Image 1: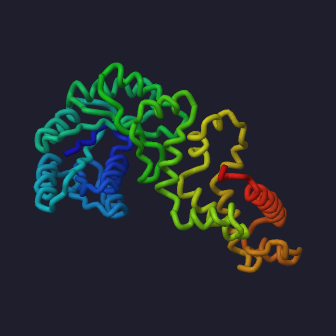
Image 2: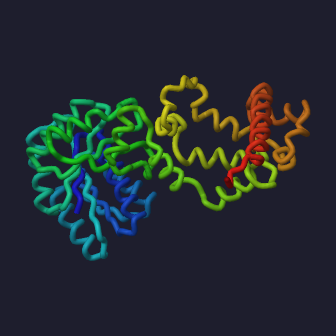
Image 3: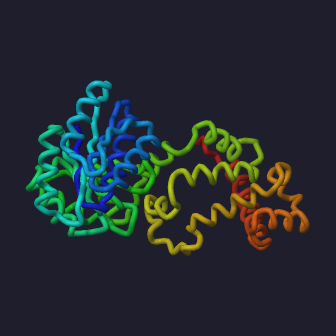
Length: 334
């Protein structure tokens, strides 16, 4: 049993679903319990997330008894052979006695092996006070820091560990349901010092990139195949699955010091490129050299993007093709 606690807005409900997703990938059979019965949106949100990750959700009625709901969820999990029950609980804007009393009764009802506090890394040192309060009242076993993909470097993690003695077990690094990483000390230090997280980048790639597509692209790049705009579109979509470009750059050592214009990391830019390529015929994607003025004007009308943007894309793609040819001649096997 895992009890998820924290203040309102810290990301408890999403974290509960992310954790269930992670456990399911590891071969476990998780179940979620919606015991935040003070906000109808919280119940609906967890039910929606449960459907997305194909994990059942036990939920009570709005305004009902969270303790009774928790007990019923425990019975349901045992009856259905679920190996882990993750209980999402109510929060407040600040710590108060009624909240802690309710959480204490839910804790006693489910007898969890883990009580995980979800804390917003963006709150900085305030997260330390929150951790202290929850630990004194409930005896937390660990912390999940959310919004570690934002501007916060995670210095609060060191303070929470030092003050409470409780470990940082997971970090939320994005809005996607796969964006929950184990809080490895070395990797966490790398994020705090802006030194990147190569392991985290590789893990994202492994989760997001299709192996067959990856192999085909590799053959095009290093083999005898011709790298086309169709291949470029496939590669771009694979990168998009890994998360926003701004997040990915933070995982690359030294990339944080690069002065990359914000416009170049705008996710809408990739959508514009996708619209341009999809407005081409299959033949034009395979042989962009046939794109004369009239064809480019037609693509402009179809994609809703100016001809100048199409010209810029084709110029960049041509430079990329040259680079691909150079890579084919490199002695990678040595």
